Length: 174
Image (cartoon, rainbow, N blue to C red; front, side, top):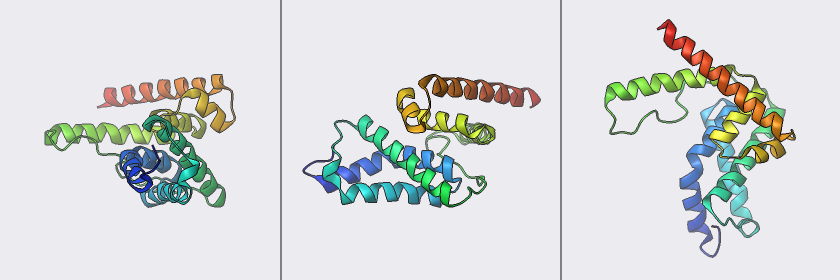
């Protein structure tokens, strides 16, 4: 993807991937501005050496950049303790054309899901975020986290089971 029209290609890549990459970063930083800074740092590094990275497809670029964002978040974690997550939306809950009541319900469900995701043990939450928001395959997650692939899939499955039962329990309480 990054080639002769490097500036245009990088701008298009940034526009296409900023949201998912910020979500990956936000999970680790717990702060919107810090997450955006992480994504900007990764793209700034890419801009300095675009010739070193030629992405055959958008999926290849997404996987590479999700790994880079995750590694940058880990660097920041080593330097400081993460702050508690603010009660902000990670992503817009619904498109603009959705009815206000539907948007409110979707936002409420997304807020519950984010809260439950934050309650998961960090290793499980990392696998969920890297797989769903980073688009990484379990093999790639295992390599990135230096764990066996079976451990990555088990963490993912366990996390989804916990999220499902907690969200079901919350619906019953309503």
